[in-house]
Amino acid sequence: MHRGHRGLLASGAVLVAVAAGACDSGYDVTLSVSDQINTVCTTSCVGSVGVLAIGNGDSPSKCISGVSMKSLRDHGLQGKFDLRVPDEFSGIWITGYRGQDCRDMAIFDGIAGVTGSEIKVPIDCVASCKDMATITVKTTNIIAAMQGRCEVGTATAVASGTLRSDRWDEVSPAPASSEFTGGAPVVLAAGNATLPGATLLVGMERACAAVATFTNGAPSTLACVRGYRGLCLNPATDAGKIEVPTYPAQPVAPTPSGEVRSIALFAERDIATMTPRPLAGATVALDPLSPPARIEYTDLTLDQNGAAVLSPRAGTSTGPSGSFAVYSSEPVSVTITHNGKQYRRQIGGGVIYGEVSSSLVAGAQIITPE
Image (tube, rainbow, N blue to C red):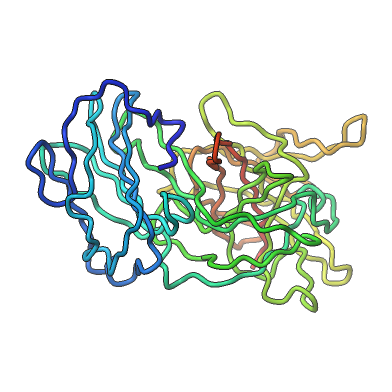
């Protein structure tokens, strides 16, 4: 399991077994799967399942590799979970991964609080195995696009996956956060890359299909993605590609409260010049059921060295750069209103876990009126 920032190493936890199915020494944990989820969420690609016991500063985890699941109900996990229970044991988080050793894309997950000795974990479908396909992506430098130019930026690799909230706030005093899980990075060539086993569909709230960009091995941007015509995709040469916004570098840091700043651009393509046209006068609102977040309109200016700088805007709508920022700890849905029409999109950043350390990565989103 990837939960480095949650304190995974057990330290003096009480030895009490947590088991999937029958349990004779403490807690009985079962997966609760609805008929709909069991039908739509195929698990043929699941190779490992992680279980984590949520506690106060100590969250023991276990990864079960070599898994072969016929379905979410016919999972074959009975008796394979055996964890030390931490102090102030408050919940269980279970995730099925496409790869071995609890890596690669998350396929399903579930979280449940502890209210007694029987814990039923309701399972959500993150990304069904049957909905994965090969996609081709092309990056767009979001800062250049705010200035009316189409550039691919400086990212050197991309990875497809999902960005999702861990929803710990449902079962623990610890705040929720988001993590990206996905395949191995693929090298970009002139801003293009073909990604096998990608998904554009997710089956749970507070999550999105996502692509992460990397610059010389370091994570730089997270983007919720969807199939659309794009802002800088050329209809003649880029048909069928997915546009991925990226920063020229990682210009923003998380706030002290743990929020991640994500930058968005609302713009249309000038048909005559095939260049971006940022749209002023758009208002942005959080969807009523979205997690807590705040919105900040921004303006782009140049500093004394000619470098682009995004600063808070005094107005209550987008300005000449068509840009705004969203501060959140989880993926959120926003509605953009412009010229009497509305456009709903997802945006967010989160944690990308590496072999040695983790990175909290900002989000980016290009939104076009379509």
